[in-house]
Amino acid sequence: MGTFYKGIVIGGSAGSFSIVSKILSNIKSDFKYPVIICMHRLKHIRSGLLEGLNLKSNLPVVEPFDKDKIEGGKVYLAPSNYHMFIEFDSTFSLSTENVCNHSRPSIDYTFSSAATAFRDKMIGIILTGANKDGANGMKEVNTKKGHTIVQDPKTCDVETMTKSTLQLFTPDEILSPDGIINFLNSLE
Image 1: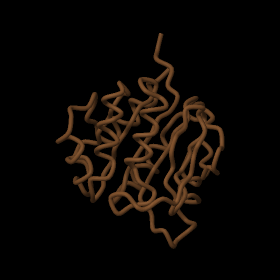
Image 2: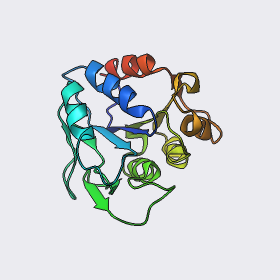
Image 3: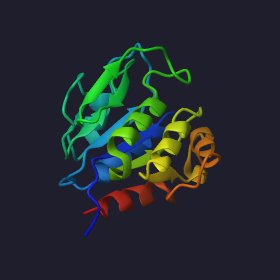
């Protein structure tokens, strides 16, 4: 009997669009878990990323509104220039609080709130990126017994984000993009 997960949470920055696109285009079309993605994006460019991911994804990709319920089989993308938090009742909370690690949305905030809400019922995945945002959030996922996956730094365009995470704790898995896809498709 496999574990039931309340969410798969993915964080990425520089170089992560192509990997996220690859994951979403190769994930099973009957994937039953919610996939929550927090990527650094340009705050003044409102469109393009969502449309680009929807063209590639086997699952519908949406930007959630404040208080939207998290549902399985959907991909949620943090809206441009908003922090995206996960609440205990499996809803989203959006905020325009100050930037964190030079970023809004902050990957740390999304991971930390998901770790608090989902605890051991989540998978946290950190991808390529040019700053350390996400490392502390992934450590919290690990502390709260979530399953942690770090993209193999050797496969990253920019390895700062993954190496910063690996300096804080030893994750459950260090995987290539193909390894991440295989892992997700193996979930029951």
